[in-house]
Image 1: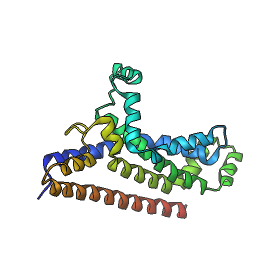
Image 2: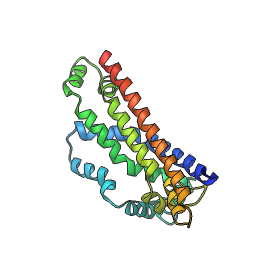
Image 3: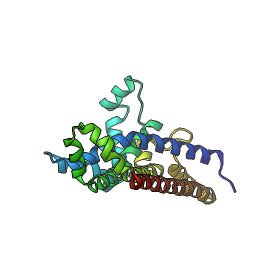
Image 4: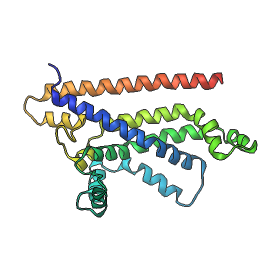
Length: 229
């Protein structure tokens, strides 16, 4: 038995959503991770708690909060709709939900990588006259690239597997908002749909394994380049 057209559509949408959710989250995740790792400021504990909140909240609650904030009748949702930006019950909303759910995992991996870098290396570069921005891009970022890659893979995997927040915020509309996890859930609600669900599980597993292997390969190459620098 082979996956049907709906399964392939769900896979394509999941990949599209995960790609954009991860790509949009990377710069913000690196910045937040750097703040938490390197800076002491009032409200740091609050920011840390807010970043990790999606990990402890039920995903359905996160999706419902997104619906309250960005729904078509919500003030913010209406303002975005006036600008031509639709989130609720649209694939772009799935991107936002996946980005929020994967963000804590990305920040965690990147923060650990930044904390592993000796601050004296950054301070030495700064004392030689390099601006702080250049120090980050020329010294810190190359050293934390394996951690950034690890966080990126974790965020992508979480985005691919996100279900609760997504189905609550954008529903489960085939061809429009139905991601692979939603399609698996829908197949399991139909008598005899187990075989199709198994095929989609295999599809999701193949993508996840390929992503992990690719990240491992890239991380090794980056580590080898750093060691040889």
